[in-house]
Image 1 (cartoon, rainbow, N blue to C red):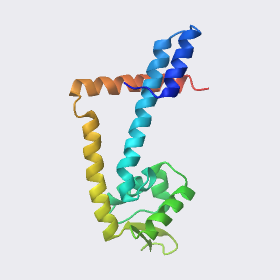
Image 2 (image 1 turned 90 degrees about the horizontal axis):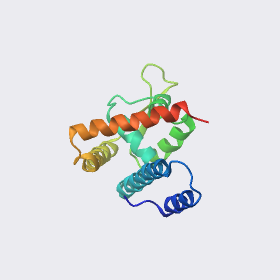
Image 3 (image 1 turned 120 degrees about the vertical axis):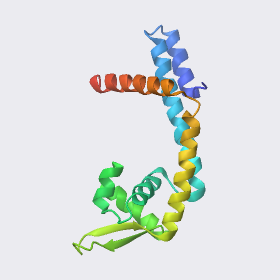
Length: 164
């Protein structure tokens, strides 16, 4: 795997200083490099549609909710603040991908729904995104996927217990 230059430099320096567990440092940097590469590829995939990851997440969530969702529910499900959702929705609304509606039960509350244009874009991008993700892991056997899941979970569990 091709490590980012900054990580190669840090590994070289760790080796020069004879730090303990340089192999562990290298593994960490491999995961970080892979994550950065996936993030870049995802952004490249979404950009032609005028979408960021945040906007895509909202389209994905709204696509699964034909009756719409309240902004606070979208924020909670997306794991972002209400202010962030408001900004994302403003952009999606300007592009006529979502519409704000008064909630039928409480007219003071809002319900966000995809417009027909938003539904079409969501359908296209969700299919494209699904195929891309499948291509990343499609060559792994079921056993390899289970092993990777287990190993990543083991590292994540350790991370949680050693957080500063």
